[in-house]
Length: 155
Image (cartoon, rainbow, N blue to C red; front, side, top):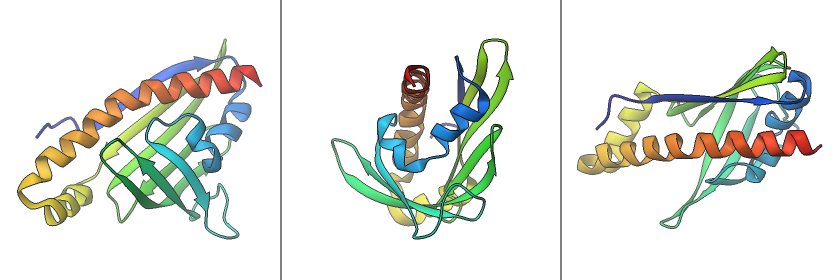
């Protein structure tokens, strides 16, 4: 298994941080940019606010599954962060103003509780399963960033 359980990448988007935040904090649009998460929906009455919860449906050629997530940080124009499950993975969108618009960074961090969860769920196959998630994040984040950039700049 790799020690590389964190990954981040960035892109400059020619829109304001507020405009970009409005896109990335709307989890119902995730299927427009994510190569794995094809749909998300808020719990009834929830929205992009700290403490809110949502469900995501993920699809790969091998399987389909759903996850439950809770928003940790919803700071308009600056940061949108959520945790999958009971502390399995933390995902963030970080936004910084720059001369060209917004420096948008997507981050992924597989958490210690996630390692414990995978060990209990997958046993001897846990390391391979974690490695698959790591590879998926490393390949998917640049694709997601490019798609969000295209969406934001076309608006």
